[in-house]
Image 1 (cartoon, rainbow, N blue to C red):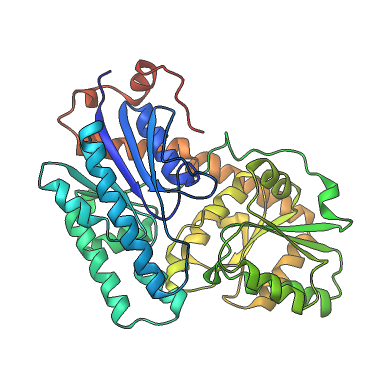
Image 2: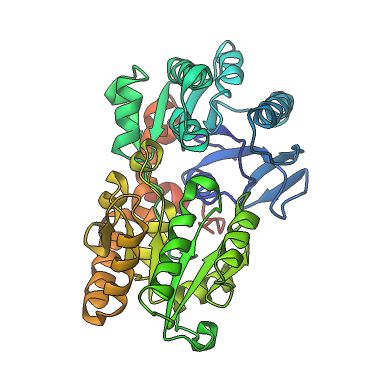
Length: 418
């Protein structure tokens, strides 16, 4: 079969297809006539060294246990880089590729990109996280390691032919800090896929006798700000006598046990449930049952400039949102959210009860969020920018004269976004 081009995607921090954005990108490129291979770590239930799914070749490598200190990150990144290089060479001879598409974090994959550029391959930087700001958020300092991360980011931008940004803030960083030409930076937002995020009837039994449920979905790390949500729940229970609210926290991460201990210390175990990582079916049951959803990410440079997928998924499900007033969070949700004073758990709590006690406002916010998703932020709209970027990058390929719709029909082999 003739391909529009062959693409090797490298992602280090999550396995595929667990990484929703990478999996969406891989499927979109496959639909558009490209042959896609992926290198990623094992984990999250995906432990096969090789799989072929939707005609996408997935090569997985082992990784050390997740840590939280600087030394553990160095070990993790070094191990990943070693396996990425070994597997990239293997794929070059086995399947071939025209483009190496690197998804951060970390910002060290350009080292592999440089090697393959020497033999004529293109290098694409898919900017998922701003690592200098992420370091600052995790360790509450800058210093020497922060400067190293800025340098690695700069070298990545120097190496890449084009950069994919998830929002305007990341595009601005690519231009101002990375020195990229504006025409070489394309915004591809992480839009929700409505074949996966589906509205369905609530299940009242999940509320465990409470009148309201407040939902949270996401990684449970220190920088996610869930302490603000726990403190808000404690304030509402003990200062406002709101015993009618159940808080459901969906997800897993390195801070989960600390958060559970914090809840236990505050005697909140009957009011807050932790589901851990659960299948999509159960996740959707909880979120569809929730009356509102929250994004308690604290205000810092990282969170202010980053688009949070959970906010978009809340909107797709028609859930009114309460969050702190972050730049990209406000851009995403607009009138589908209330915005609490930054890093103020009491104001977060007040906004939660105000929204719970005003059903008409919740209904208006539900409609606003779903309309915004459908008009602007769906993945079916965002993926066209990805395809356009690749057509420009590989403009010598014959398939670039064929429309996206024609390519989808031409490759009518059942490929679809999962």
